[in-house]
Image (cartoon, rainbow, N blue to C red):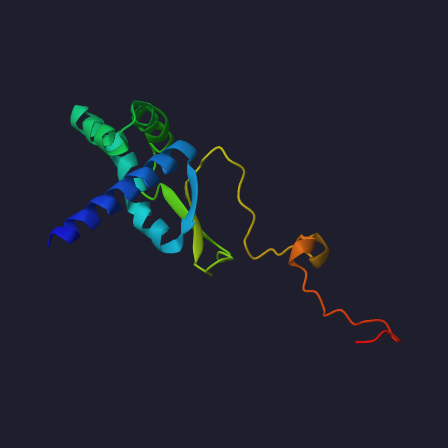
Length: 150
């Protein structure tokens, strides 16, 4: 069962990287399944920061592996959510990814300093949709002018 351990390590590192991105940027775009997976860890980090203590600070530091991000969770984010019991993150569904039609979502911390997201159901009018570059046009087969031998 050695191969199972290897994949667990890879998943752990991916999760740590996503947690660092969420704390640093406070808003992350990812697939819907990954966002659901990361949401509980994002909430748990805020809970550890709110509880305080050296042990929780060590857990955060070991998980985030960055002193600045650890201090951001303890000093900024935990103070922002001092009156809130739980539910520090929220998830928005956005349109599917173009390449493989994967369900996409935005995971963000509640009450972040960024402007609110537009509602995903609001569509741009056809005049504002960008046109594809000319190199992607479908060319019709050239028809020789009349009177020329084929």
